[in-house]
Image (tube, rainbow, N blue to C red; front, side, top):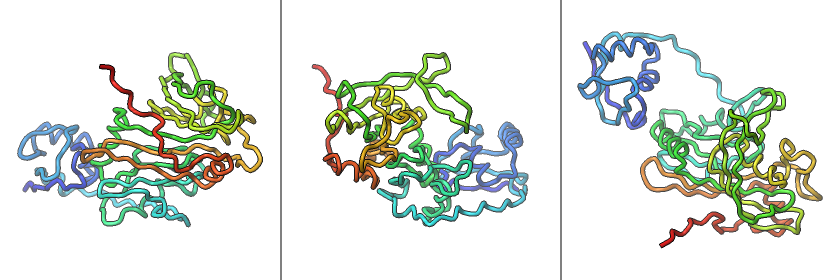
Length: 327
């Protein structure tokens, strides 16, 4: 006999096929499509498609062949052993999401030779939820600052949509060598990959057909003579290494960014040769309505540099205020 299952809040907003993948992994996609075509799987008594999004409280009709399918239990991968505690990095949390202040030097996701990364540590933040927290975006390993983590599938989908539709404003702070000629400007330069993956691959400004459009707005917040400048950058697009390449293209590479600045990116005196790029703040549409606005304190090595150069690490100026509409 068919059974009815109710969609829970944790599954609110996900696609129907992903619900089955999560709860009935033995059911192949091809079999699910066949059951949907025959009307044996229904949502609130109605026929449905695999790409339909389901809502908490809806009733799913499941035929016996789904209920009795069994799949071999796969052992869960062992959690990454680490001395770090992600709880110490939490800037904000609610039932939908976390905002972390990612430390410089900690990778967002795993890769060759990496033993510690945020994604591998997210089990620390499960708390009362039955679903594992999920990264919404990423930061480079040596970039510190604001990192969004969803606590539910619905929140992950909503935040990802806000980022994809550019209903979000991310502001980065950087210390660069030299001072941009314009105190406020826009870098519009398409980017493409060059080199071999894992062996010196990097992004470069390109006018080739496969290059991807990239746009960054920037503003000089302060300067120490003509040697260093504190720059706020707002990426309108989200390309790999976008801010790093665009600021280097102005002749002002980020301090510590030897990949794109070479020896010109070297610090001086007590200014550390670490990457001076920090995801300072985010303003993004919340998955449950309204806006989320969070600011992250600077990483220790950037705090030190700001103090040495006389910059205010708690500066609250808006480098990109909304433009006034002409009457």
